[in-house]
Image (cartoon, rainbow, N blue to C red; front, side, top):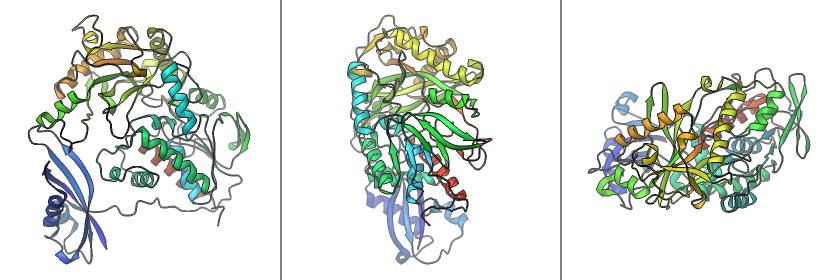
Length: 536
């Protein structure tokens, strides 16, 4: 039995699943007999809304074919038929080097979770240390900050079970072409995600499902012999020459055979400790900006025209980009029907992010509008990168009244079209409206403000109403990605160390849930390829 994918089947919005299969079968019958086509399934689906009066669904269909293949690959490809990538399970190889102690993973975000899962499935019994709380306690900490402004610097939107992704839109889209991404989606479904994420071109699960998935992941890892230790912060590395022998944590010392750093992008104090310990780090480019909010129905109208509100269509979402001089300006982490959330993890700083549940049923759409920041903008040092972010967060905190309210401004005021306009049509969702009207230009560096203005006007030409005066901007968005990278070699090891594996978003090797999870899988595979399986 062979599996083929029939790609790029474009049909009108009213087409049924039978219509999709009929189109796929028509192509397949050019090369295969009717009897050899065993089954057809929807593989992927997306919306083509470029012509608003003629919206199409675009499908890929998975076909199971019995028997030989008469046509060559070029003829199949010319008809949009390609062989399937096959099994989604990671290919595990075991090494021969003995592992002196259990692997220790720092961080239980997507990278740490999937690294731990793969190691646990293969008998390595990893220990995961996570500075934050489990899902239940963390949810309460986030609620308390949202409602009362009481920040827990060790358990918040950035720290805790599932990492920063737990309180997000749960987007699973990635630009990397890693076969492990398919395994990530399948495993999420096994842990409780809706099965449709396997077929969507832009899959997402939402915060409501992510909480369940993270809890189920922890239980699975534990059942396989691993451990997840919450409220356990990495404080020091223990060395013997160029080998990590253990870690000192807030709850005592833990010996380790290998150490996997699956840090998040906000672990600034841990970065400081690693630098003081001699771990090599380099600064890298990142982006800063603001969150923009529109009425979701206006986004739907701009994208779908007369089809806006049709229940067959997903909530409208966009991804926009342009260049202002040599700087990139782009939208990031767009949350249809979501809310702007408070992402602070340090006292005296305001940080914004976006979140939505699976149904995306909120009134507003939001996304980051971000501008690239280059090492030259902050002195080209690791300390300079973090100081750049912190300064903006503190200025936003002060502009919001030093109470974790966020500075907010209408797009009309920001662009100078209106003056002193209070939000009235689009109401800010940050902490249920706990914002203070404040000029964002007084917070943002000049090059960021100018690039944002250019971007808003440019995006309005691509998506009608994007720069509408009624839209609102809330600041600041500073945690788009890690400001540092821990260089590693072709085996995944930090340079100069024999058993230290930096991985994921915090180490500078991922950007989102799926890519971080895939990097965690790559890290686990590298460890297993080198070290003997303790259970064999």
